[in-house]
Image 1 (cartoon, helix red, strand yellow):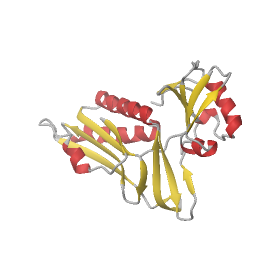
Image 2: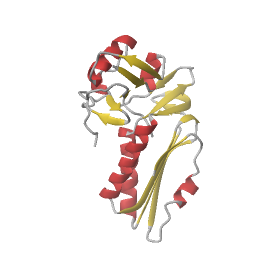
Image 3: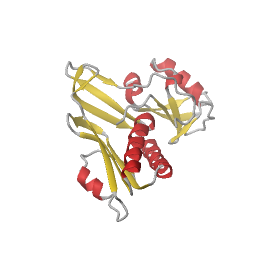
Image 4: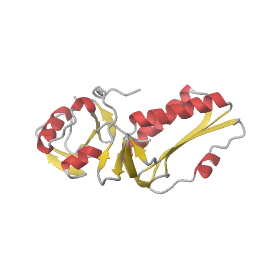
Length: 147
Length: 79
């Protein structure tokens, strides 16, 4: 399950949704809003998503991770809208029989989200400026899947 | 042809809007972006963008149809 949320999310509640009698491990990742980036003081962030495609691409990543790793369940929630410093921006959770698969799958999910899911971050700086981050300076080939 | 074009992130800022109806003679995504890039002064070249039609990634050569929703996606920065 990949979700976008306009309201704060509760990690403990989300992690419980992964519970399974065969699970011996649960790995989670939380992305938080940081007060600086590239040497500039950041006051808050705005996240924007192209929701239909973000949801389908997010689900595609979760399907891939089930095929690649021996896991039981995987979930992710990404915030959209305005977030303050310290807020949770993205949560990823994976349950598995053993820890290696849980760690590896969790990392795969967050790495792929950052590469492929149409969500953008607007940084609002202390000096009053703001800017959308488009960090990938490498060419993106036409229509090819970035996998 | 009439298309509905959505703009996100820096493209939205540059265009000064989130979406517009575009009446165009362009029949594929590449032609449509070229036309809109000239109109709005987008600085991102197509080599840095991906394109989606009706909610799915497509190739730049994708043939467009009347009423399609077209989105040019700048490099993403979620997480």
